[in-house]
Image (cartoon, rainbow, N blue to C red; front, side, top):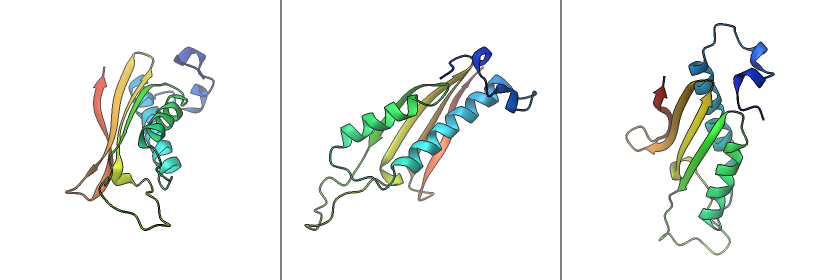
Length: 127
């Protein structure tokens, strides 16, 4: 995977006015969406193993520097004998660091009770 814009073969497919900052946001947002849709519904046997798998998957995406995933759950909840816990968006807290050129962006995802929604958002933008 390319790690700098000069080696990015996809760059020619983006509008020439796309800034490094916009591209960093785009790449990080794609990573969040991919992680969410790839893993929601997965059975949870060992949350730590699933967290590491999600982090490794995220950093395989172009221009994603790092990822941190935390799965929160109802650990005291007893499952019926033939059911098992499945990952939902409400259980996820994700942090992504994407970098493109000189631009760096931190994105996150977490469940927001007031919205009753697992919200994806921009934490910080530099520059």
